[in-house]
Length: 126
Image (tube, rainbow, N blue to C red; front, side, top):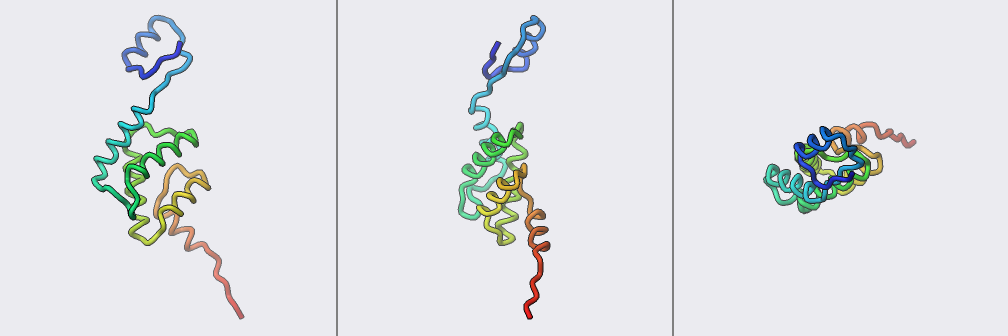
C-alpha cells in the first residue's frame, strides 16, 4: 500500500487494520510550508543580496539530496541565521554554501569557517 500525504490518524488506522505500508509519499507542498514558516520566522527578505526564499529552498533540496531531510522549519531558520552571521563577518556566502556541499556538512556555521582560516599554514619566505 502506498499512501500520499497521510495524517497520523490515517497511518494509525492502517496499522491497526493489519495492512502493510510499503511507502509514504509526501508532496512538495509540505516542503513549501516549512520554507514559508521559516521565512516568516526569519523576518528578512535577503541575505547579502540573495533572496531568503531561494536560500531556504536550496538548503531543503540539498538536505534531501544528502538524505538528511528537514523535518521542521527550525533548521532552516538556523541555517539562515548562520548565513547572515557569515555575511556580516565578511564571508562570501555562495562560497560557504559550496564548501558545505563539497564537505557534505548538514549546515553551515560561522565557527567552521573561522576555524578553517586559523588552520591555514603560515608560509615563511626567505
